[in-house]
Image 1 (cartoon, one colour):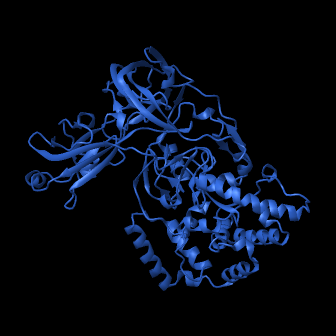
Image 2 (image 1 turned 180 degrees about the horizontal axis):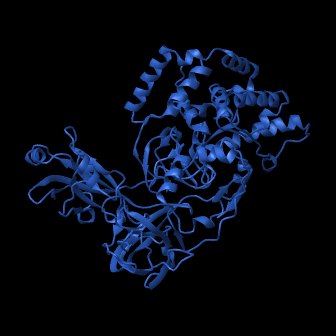
Image 3 (image 1 turned 90 degrees about the horizontal axis):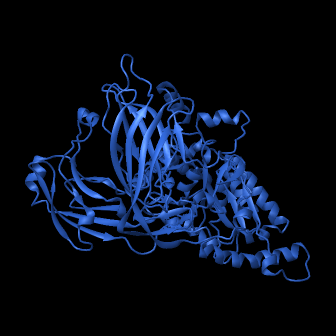
Length: 625
């Protein structure tokens, strides 16, 4: 699985997660007010740039992107046939120093026929620039060569420039504004008739662009307040040539949202071309109230309540097993977790056997957490449909599982079953969920191991732990990068429990009912119905996160080096086109599943790598940032 636009999840991972997680003194979300600043970046010149053309020097330009300050990519003008191009162009960003600001500067060679060639890229940590200072940097583009880029940085304070920041010390959420747009089609009838395929665009927003259709009369955009969002109109081309050249650009000015009175409906004429404009009603409001993403490295209140109740069950069980004469005190009761790996039906069968053995040894009630991935989650999902499963003889569920495994699998692929899958997937699409191969796989697994369709959801399992009567289940899914890196190069675990879904790594969690919905900057933007738990089984089947590169790593030993110390800048030389294509084939995940990223928009805190609970897992070693 991978989440869309992560700030951007192997089958088995050896981590003593639970013991470590519960030892930390965790911190909760804090909201404070901080000033923001104007950063000026002047691209002066580049030196000793190699030619990518056969007969002439490169036609160079520089692109600038600061994701923590804007969605826009800014560019210098093109300097033709120059190995030492000079630009002397300035660009400006409104930045918040409390977040991690890393400026990406890319040097390109313009090509009129094919895609522009990326020559070098350098990432610069803006934290080096202090308010009131001007710094001139000669950025090395190649550690083995003389190529360099001269850039000047200047940081200035803004009168009255303050914003509220919510943070847990790892992630930060910034202020968000909501723009509501209303359009009277009768008043705009002539404009809409003469101009087709019109889009309303706010590049700094979650939605970015929304097309005007026959049905649409109102639009909503969610924007980072201090990114200077602007509403514009453009005409999107449907032709092949138009798509190749890009959308029809208009030189007409848009409407800056900061110029609109907050909370009041304002009529504006939005220019579409020199001879046409749209009459709109706009209203801007600040998104106030608590975040919908919980930013906190502590356990949620519901889980803490469960631990309090489960502690009594564990203490009583341990007293019997250890033949203790006195009751255990609260601080003496250990937190014990059982963690199972994946492996399909084999993992499911093995987990049933292990739990049965623990029950016969009177040890099952000594367990606080059960965790699993892939096939082990099939066992957990079935057991937790019974709110008192651990208090009953497990031979009943085991016999049913044996029957399911032994029976013919052909019924899951019959015409009747395929028609049923089609109906369910169409309904899922109508609810707004994207449909992937893993959804089909989930329905097949549900058919193989259950006689009847169950409408149970992950949140329904709260009934099985509300009195601490069973261990708390935690299901694991692997988050990976899309088609760019192998799982060995990047992976992180996302945890699913009846109470929350989230990343302990970042201290960010949402309610299970909201998983699959759209979030921006910690706020719920588009609510979708909670998926049936069978659809989550496809996500927990982490085999779909593998690519060809991962398969190669399975057959060789791999030892990860410790990462270098924190650097203020890093340079990158892009590979040649053929190697890029080959790497793309090796790292592609054609049957992986994407889910809306509930961390979307959230930004890393400036000191996130120093936080005591943040860790960057590499292989079987935990390397603290």
